[in-house]
Amino acid sequence: MRGTENDGVVPFFSPDGEWIGFHDGASSLQKVSVEGGVPITLCESGPPSGARWESDGTIVYAQLSSGIWRVPDSGGEPEVLVEPDFEDPRSYDTPSLLPGGRTLLFTAGSPGQVVLKDLDSGDQRVVVERGLGARYLPTGHLVYFDDGSLFAIAFDVDRLETRGGPIPVVEDVAVTSSQGIATPHFDASLAGTLAYLPRSVMTPQRRLGWRDRSGALLARDSSLDNFNSRSRVSSDGAFIATARSADNGQDVWLYGVERSTWTRLTFGGTSYRPIWTPDGARLIYTSTGGLFGVPSDGSDAPERLTRASVTQHADAVSPDGRWLIYHEHGPSASDDVWLLDLEGIEQPRAAVGSEFREAGLEFSPDGKWLAYQSIESGQWEIYVRPFSGSGKFQISQGGGRGPHWVRQEELFYSNGGVITAVSVETSPSFIAGKPQVLFESAVVDFMVARDGQQFMMMEPDEEARTAQQINVVLNWHRELKRLAPVE
Image (cartoon, rainbow, N blue to C red; front, side, top):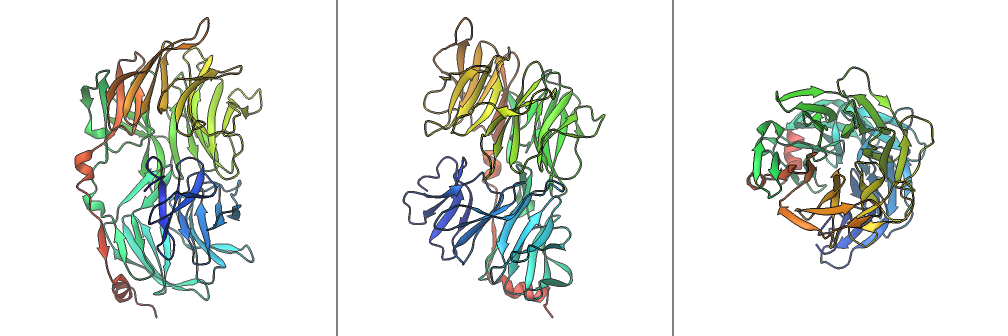
């Protein structure tokens, strides 16, 4: 649909089916008519981890570790419904209002608890100890996902309490993880239609392999299928850090390239998007409530580096190991790119300080420059600026994302799957050459070897993508009542 071609994510229908709400993939929640037209901005927001358009004319949406919010469907200032808890940080997902509009149903934490909150008193309690994606249906059930199946449990919407125990009602339901959130692939309408993606037909959606500068495939390992799209290679090429689904969430793992072995570094909760420190001794990653560091050899427990009510993503560590640069997402995020002194001498400070969204930051090999992508021109472009000082230089032409700076004299980035190289000089002054196309790939993410000659490519498996199916069950409420009678 117009206006959603590049980054439209987390779509959801209005109750009358006339509108589609979505996030623009950058900084705002929007809506667009199903007939087409220009999207309308509702509010500023990071990408939601679940959204629901309610019949009372509001939209409720979750923000990973940043709580749950509500905004009028005509647009306006978001209202917080669930504040993030710094003492007990957790992720939030799939919010919705129960009939009457005064009780909020949502999923919290990992492997997931189904929670109710009274919006008048502020009281909240857990009603299902383990479950994801809970929905209340007019049959008198809560339906939720756990361990590959859908379960139903009788629920008294007046007393706000469950009755009896959970009953499995649909098996073989797929779940995938992204941004640390496990997402079961099902939905059930109030009118009685169920749609879900079967787990048994899920085949690897991503393939990871190595290509040379011409795009020729050098190697592929089936052990790397369905790697997280934010995988990162150690400086010596011996290990790949990634996030893998576990226990209805995600954890950080290492893959040993030579022996094809897996090592788990975090346990429980929501942990993803790891990056390496330059010496390879530590990984820094996103988890609920902030950023954490963990030794890459697993010799010690994770250490909290930041504490935040917004989602924080680590981008890079300076070559001397002192500075961590990271960016933020969330309705309360202000300056979106920050520097953290890993030696603890200085307080965190804004790194770029512009009014536009920046991401994908990289240090130059000598640590004196920053490459990053910014949306200030209306589309993502690659820029370079001094690490200390002012000014900036635009590198890409016609769009660019994901800068990689592994050699002082050359930058790489992707633009719609076109892998591009740019020669640069940084002394005595900064000069960038003309972008040179290397090859095209349906790339999800990529990394560049230290010599600049090989590229680790995360690419979609087109054959596998066409093999999927969606199961649709009409009049499912009748079957639900048969399988899980409500007394």
